[in-house]
Image (cartoon, helix red, strand yellow):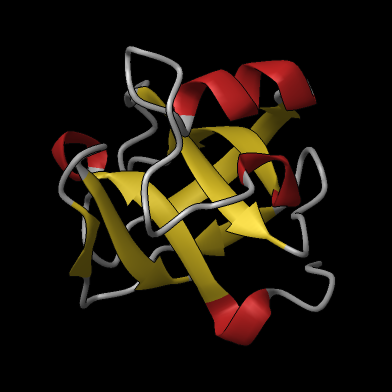
Length: 109
């Protein structure tokens, strides 16, 4: 399923974090889109992410136990990716990774 994900760590926007939820990868973002999302509105890098092009952006959809459509969101993985169509679970615990970008660091299982 996953290629050598950096210690299993992923980044997700704090307002999209659903602890322990299973998700399916819908597609991957173009590198240029990922870079823009991992920079400030002024196009500057943040101290935590000096090279945003090292990350792969993923479009994911949380899965619901009752089959209802759940929100589509983004997550970012450095030095790895999850293939489109694959499923995984987002970690139960998260910590603030970048307050400037409102990103949490968590794990993928």
